[in-house]
Length: 216
Image (cartoon, rainbow, N blue to C red; front, side, top):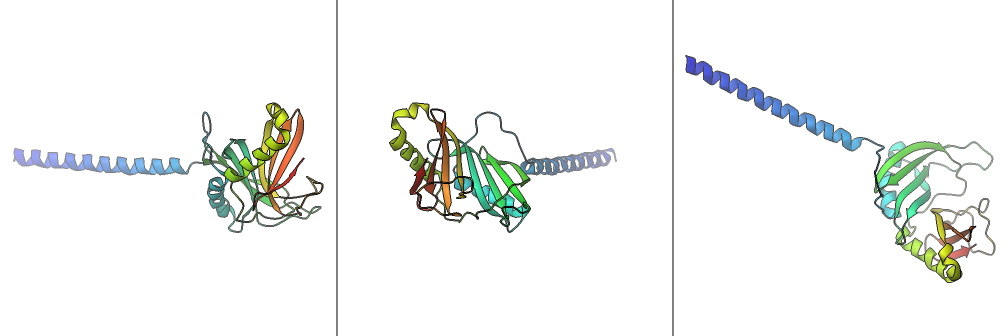
């Protein structure tokens, strides 16, 4: 009888142990999944850099959850490297255009930092010119074009060059009037802003074919 009792006791203890291990695994899986879904997050140290197209692919998924009709109208690269990748990409989405003097509709901003989404929020920002097409050239192609144009025109003062921002947008003459250029309101372009000898300069290139539009 004692052996039977001992055997039953051992069996019960093994069963309890298995149940506890199973519960611990399930709990661990749940916690891991929860951590994966936590956003935003903080990156310590230097950011991993990625190209604009990959950043857009990630941001678009997030924007579509906000509104399935969301469309990209502007992208801003920060900490841009010579190969056209950037540590931070901010992308702005909207569902409709605004009237210049009318009410501003809600927009959605997604920030990709270090190759992952780090921030997303609703913002009030006017968009008046249009939405970006799907066939814009990637930053890894556009940025070298801008730099080469910069070298040709400002070679003698390149030691004072400092990049401010790298933007993909629809051209709006209301904010950035250009002289003698073949670009119309609403045309998509990459714009590189930089300082030379403490003076703000801009390079515009066509976001579809990469042709240089203006350097001012």
